[in-house]
Length: 114
Length: 111
Image 1 (cartoon, rainbow over the protein chains, first blue to last red):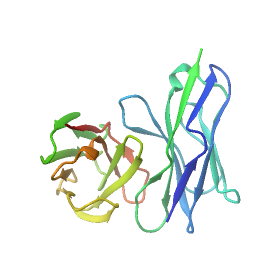
Image 2 (cartoon, rainbow over the protein chains, first blue to last red):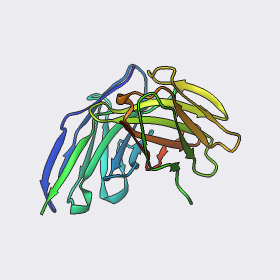
Image 3 (tube, rainbow over the protein chains, first blue to last red):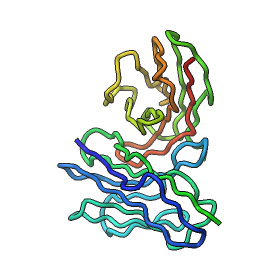
C-alpha cells in the first residue's frame, strides 16, 4: 500500500517570500507523484507531476518540485509567493502499474500575508 | 476544451434517503474516478471506471455504487444516506494511465 505524509498542515508566509511545502511518501513499488492545488469552493487543479526523467519538475504558476528517491520526498517550492497562491495544496501518488487511484496526503494550507 | 463537469453543485438530503451525483468527463477521456473529501478525513478514493467497467473500488460500503455510460459519463449513487456521508464528492477523468483532471465537485449535506 502507498501512503503520503505532508509534514505541515499550515504554512503562513509573507507575500514575495519563498515557500517550501514538504511531502514524503511510502511505497513498495514505483509511483508517479503529483501536486494539486485546491482554491476555496473549487475542485483540484494539477500543479505538476513527476512521471520519469529529470527529478526537477516545473509546473504552473511558478511552482516546481524535486523528486528525491532516496529520501522518498517530493517537496514543492516557489521562490516568491503572491496573495493569489493562498489555497490548500495536496501531494499525491499513484502506482505506475495497476490500480489508477490517487493516494493523497492530508493537505497543507498555504496562507499568504501582505 | 471543457473541463470535467459535475452536477448538481450542492445537494441537501436527510438520513436514509438516496442520492445520485453526475459527472461528465473531458472529451476523449475514457476513465472516470470518484473521490470523497470529508472534513477530517481528507481525500479518499471511491471508484474507478474505465470503458464502462468498474476497475477498482476504495474502502467504502456497498451502498456506494456507480456506473459509467457508453458516452463515458458517470453516476455515483449513495443509498441509505448517513450523517457521515456529508462531504464534497469529486469526479476526475483521464486517458488511461495519464494524470487525472478534477471537476469542482458536488457538496452533499445530510441533515
